[in-house]
Length: 278
Length: 257
Image 1 (cartoon, rainbow over the protein chains, first blue to last red):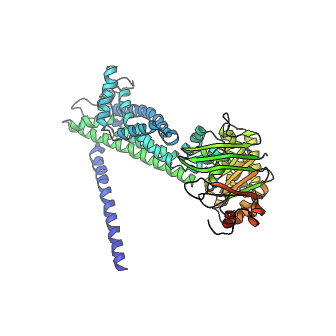
Image 2 (tube, rainbow over the protein chains, first blue to last red):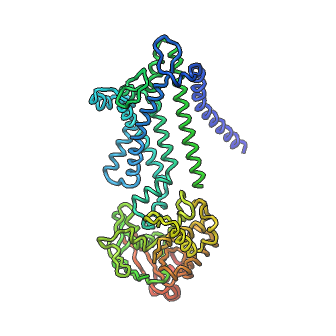
């Protein structure tokens, strides 16, 4: 009995240590980013554009709007595409095409993001003779589509077959069964998949570096080079000016904050649905 | 209500032929029980009657099922129409978790394009009364459908199947996941339902078959390289007192299965 208790204590201890080891880097990252970046975060940070070299102050508003534009467009493209692909794979795909699509999604999922950037650079930027927010959005779609597809397919597969059969046995056509029973039942899971992909899109640097380039000024034209928060961080972090480096840390805070809000939002929504489903 | 004729019916899962040359007549307005040991193809036969079998990947059916003078496997028949006339209740209660009690009952109608609120509500009340669940749930129509007890959920599913207005109901071991009291309620419901709908019920519980059915079919798969066959089919009292086939007698007296 004591041996078993000792073993239990030992393993519980090991689990606690493992848990702590996982949390420590996260806490350190947040602490360090706040420490370095908070001095940059003030009203001007959100309203002003990039300062000239050596000039104090300035902000990142052009990069935040740019990130919103690029990720927004990428979300508009990749969410319908990803969800529809997942519905096809889970509900209709039985033949070779489904195997092929799933294989492609899996390969894309593990493709280095710079490859996606280079690919879209060759395909879109070269063809259109211009770096642009649209090219950046397409490059992000290459990364977000497989995330949404695979995660959504997994949640759709979790919907019990009993519910599908119940609907079919009521004389409901298959497409309507999918639309009105399967997708709503998987709702919170699909939402989580989307949030996951959007969070990924916020943070990606390499694909938009090769497609959106950068822009020191606020740009709302999707066909023009556009700034983004991760690009700014990348540029400022490499610079020699301490003021710019501080701005880079401030950018890091914004990204962390955005991802945090998204994660909490996803969690709240999925909790609410879980409670509703009992 | 019409009689349903099963003529030379065969069913496959992939290369495995699970039903072999089934012929039987389901009589209108009566309760027909299908009994037999596990894996004897009772559920498969049931699912062939409203074209649900073919929803399983690689599943296949040959032969005929004729309802009145309607050939259910005819070339121009839409399976969704068949299922509106021949409804189904499953072994595990399966209310739609995203819908309320009321939405569950009218789901079949709404998903087939009926939206008139008043008529939907009337239909729901009628179906829930038939299923014997109106009095219990009429004050909880807007509660989530996923949080009922097993017995209530199953009777809700019966109401959901009835709301579409079928004149035949296929029940696949509808009480086997329920406690004895809920089972009793389901059996009472079946007795009242047979005034309005023809019922075919699959059960592995022979006492249940003897209690509730008018006619009983006994199925058996004698070896894995042969398909299941309909061994004997007769009035329930004959089947349980004086069966013709030795295998029926052996099963009913509990010597196997």
